[in-house]
Image (cartoon, rainbow over the protein chains, first blue to last red):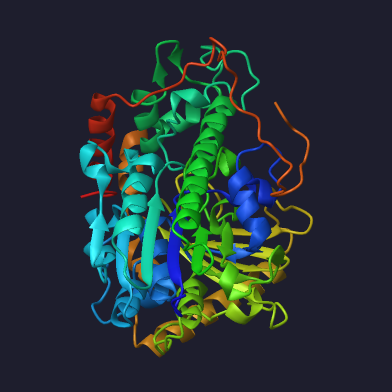
Length: 442
Length: 50
């Protein structure tokens, strides 16, 4: 057996942790992912320090906080500097054959860095995120069977769970027990039509021969069907590795770049807002030859910046000092007691311009500019009493809110000083998509 | 629809298949080519894609 492990790093875009069985979802959306978690290790508290897709993936591959790499917005002005560490590039230099089954390089060029192969079946679609797991797997499986002669790193980015939720026809009937998804008297989604993404959904994939889909429970069922469809793809991928005799020494690392709101916090089927439904992401690591502590669940806080250094350590590669995340390989292997961060600080700068500070008990959210939902600039949640983050206690607990704000601002000031930067990147970018949203509402 | 919590990842769990005859009220949305084009156009306006 080759000494260095193969790596298949998988991001399921917009996959909300608590819609998976292994994260206590009551519906059977994910039998194969659950099995993977049972045989591997699951992280219960993995957080995205930057959302949505572009900031988060940039953190995954650089091992850096968004304030450091500077990509704080999706579709923003900032560009990743050429000297930033980049996981596929480092592994390529270590002798890995690198392959992306992905479309992100079509959004920003740095997502193509370090790959000897880029497979992109989405070229067959008008909209690249319409590419399905079957189309991606078709290319990925063919490549795994025919190309690598030594250790390989493959990145697969599945879009199925990202809107539009259009699962295969054969999933019809799953996860919905209502009786009229297109009831014209149902107005629960009306507010969504005032958001550009909601209007786009109304004008396209929610239009059916039965009429416009108006029942949020049905939209959630579509999302869950997409997870089930993705889950089938995971099974196909594992079957290929078994057939090729590669399963033992291949690391499968499944995660999400961010979650999805469903209808929580008046954010419909999207991934903004710094609530746990969106910033706490699923993470499952499977590596039979790596002596992982199978079936264990790590509770301490981790961040997506920890993924790259952990994979580098697993391959015996020196971790560049510019990487800020910390490897937790020894914890995955049960050789160290689980430990992690006391707090996570994260941000968004796309539909809203905000920071969050989360510790084991509280979440504090600070807006750099007023949001269009009319939320106050400061939100504080007691996660022990209110895990859904439904009751803002900032006004009732002003001292605690002030203390967390001071802690957050102090961290940011120190960070910027250490980086030799002077400007807050979230203030600098602002909420890059907000003006379009505002124009849409007017 | 199953609503009870279940064990995680056990081999003895068989996830239910979709019904052989889907309920007629289930409209099964689809993305038509013109929908894909419209989605791409709107997301390009947003700066989400280039």
